[in-house]
Image (tube, rainbow, N blue to C red):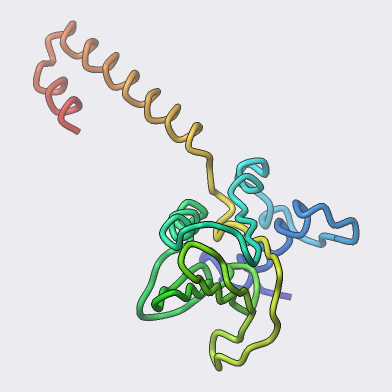
Length: 182
């Protein structure tokens, strides 16, 4: 039992992401026990699934392209505090602290190829296991697709132009200029 308050509890957020990841992975053995507040306002499950990164040993992908995928999936690059939802880069190694688990992945590159994938304890650095392939779910439930983002930007621009025209038609030139500059 975790008492409710108005702040976002890191443990509850981890459990929400873990549950969403399990449900969207196709597992048939998931039982969810939750309050409505834990699922209220959840992002689009299709966008969440589309932003899951599947990688495997031997896969051809440049390190920079992989880093871009992590950022698109809402992971943040860090050099200081390595916490959930962050990744760090050390040469040809990329450490990803999954937002929904208590372990991290270390992905080693050799040129533009994934050489190895292993899980480790982000606090002690102790290696747990090696994997041939893994799926890295987004770091946040509110991830969206590029198409949705572009459509929203165009809609905002269209709405802004309509508002500028309205202000000009009603003689509010200062308001039109201000909104246009923003």
